Length: 296
Image 1 (cartoon, rainbow, N blue to C red):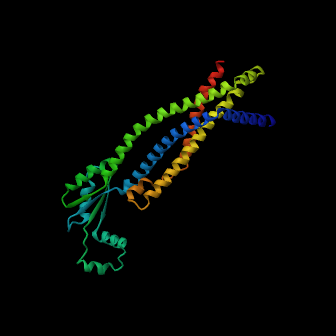
Image 2 (tube, one colour):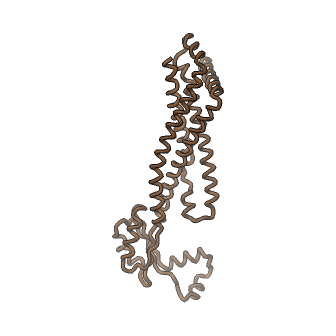
């Protein structure tokens, strides 16, 4: 037990000593990792947001087919159900639509209002859900050709643009993140090699007194992992601040914009991913650095 405590104290002391000797190079390594993880985290969070957006609006971004006057939604439902790309058809009678609209408008006396307008001004509606967001435009075109359908409304164009933008940004982000990953590893390797060079005499003395490779290497490995974890913490703080700021800006805006910023329920996963990725980068960089010890 005492030996284990001594070894832990030794590793902690040597790691802190290495961090002190790194000086401003430590900040260079940490900031490089932080920028990398910030971009990675934003991309990952963005993909989660879009995924949650499509999951929610996959049921809500429906094609609304408004029927001609006198056409009942239930009568046309079997015909619409047979169209390609159709997942589900929900008939909405004009009475149901009028009751829902009146409730939204805060109309208390529905009968009186209906009499003032000389009857229900609405028509029956079919809410048609597509199998996938990409199938929405094709479904809308097919609905326009159905007899009895007067107008078709949908926001599939917005979904398609968001999907294409996400697809294009994904390729760009892969390239940028790959480049920054190599840069972060290089900076960490360089930083630790400078620390190793400054402690070359101490390392040589440790070898002469019989210190194992693990005893010599481990403090530098821990130092590299510390760089990664510190960079992950900084990146996570920036990402959280960004989400809070965007949430405030989106308050009171269009429902579609608020939908893009909805809670994904994965907030606890992101810091774990950032710490894991940052720690892996720090470990790889430190492994490259300690190779210099083995060649001495």
